[in-house]
Image (cartoon, rainbow, N blue to C red; front, side, top):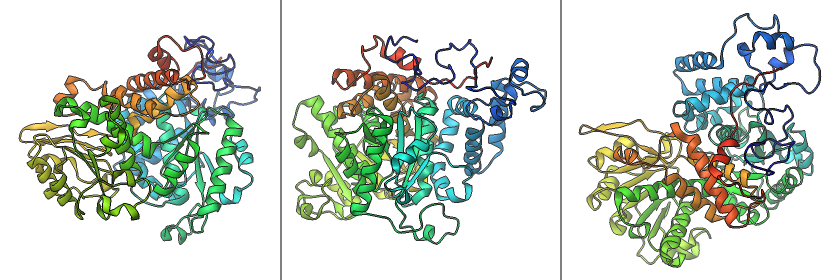
Length: 582
């Protein structure tokens, strides 16, 4: 056992309690392991098992011991050489979707090599397996669909969801990412094809947060789609019917949540992903007191944006409460971020949250959210309706409120026009502009536009990546407010502490941990987020702070608490290095 004492039983993996069927975790890296639980007559099956296949990296000794002679060409490659060859091949593809398909093929063929590639080349490959390319992959999921990844639970399975969960080969699942495909990124209703999102998110839980792949389960709940194009597509892979709503929808979700708890226990983290606004808020409110649930669109986005804001204060000066915030977009992301900012203000200044909310203004499709609109507002928008005359256009709201920080979560591209950015720059020395909508095509403005229209004074961050931009002889490196900074480390922290519920203070702890990783060197480049190249270290620090908060709040069940949580988090992280087979 690594330095966790009795935290995890002997049958379990160090990385959070997954059954160690092959002895991989009780063995140190230099000890050989047996990749079989039953004797076999041929190594043919071994080569087709992605978890244990090493391709040309099987040694001479392993080829003899595991009946692989003649099934492979005679050359023996190291994992590093395989990685070099694959990166060379990937770079030949000019179309991002081709790279995505090649990466998914690799994941289904050789799991460890897939994660080695992703970890070692994270800045280059993150946009391939995650936003923005994953958006296009979901739109075309039907045509690129080869082999099912994860579980599909549709209305056909009503009354049998527990049986469906038992069909999944892994018994010790720790993280489930689930979507119903109704609001995929800024692309809308993609129905069953939204599966690309849970698959992509969970590959990042492993690569960036070190959660063991066998502990991750992607799920798509298919209740139909309202997307006419998909309903009329003969190759659509989901249910060809309009979306179920109301009681029928609620009953299916209730059965799903109960079955998950029954099958995997109290401590499985369920991450809701890309649900439509009305369902997202309702599901989080309904299940947060009975299940270990987390909504990345509401809470993950809020946590990563708050981290950027806390870090940006070093450049802007003052405390959070000294600033005025204006949001374009009042859905899951916008209201989630606003609430977490208000919570952090209250933590810092001790004022009631209602008072701090008054420093935060939101604009939705009908204009500025003000008191006179309260009657017609959805419940989650009501706390943000402040005293002010109605304002229809964003640019007029900017001129009226005079925010120091402008945040876009609208899901609609090109909303931060030249006039809007120039207005921000007219009354702010350093306007902070965050264009958070994904994918890149839906960003409220580009990095180039923000820097050019503010004459190089803006501090800019976006949801999807933008290349560095030179303005007036200075190179600006745009920050990326990417949820992938938060959710993998957050998930690891929840797992290593054995947390049974998610508390807002754990999200604040994650934000503060991320903000503390931004150095003076990063600030000099205008960055308010650290580079992704160091993401595993960042995730371990976030995990440690989240776990510490879970212990402090009495929500942790893995006792006693390890002395050094950062070292413990690092020791629990999955390593993609090949094991030696005896």
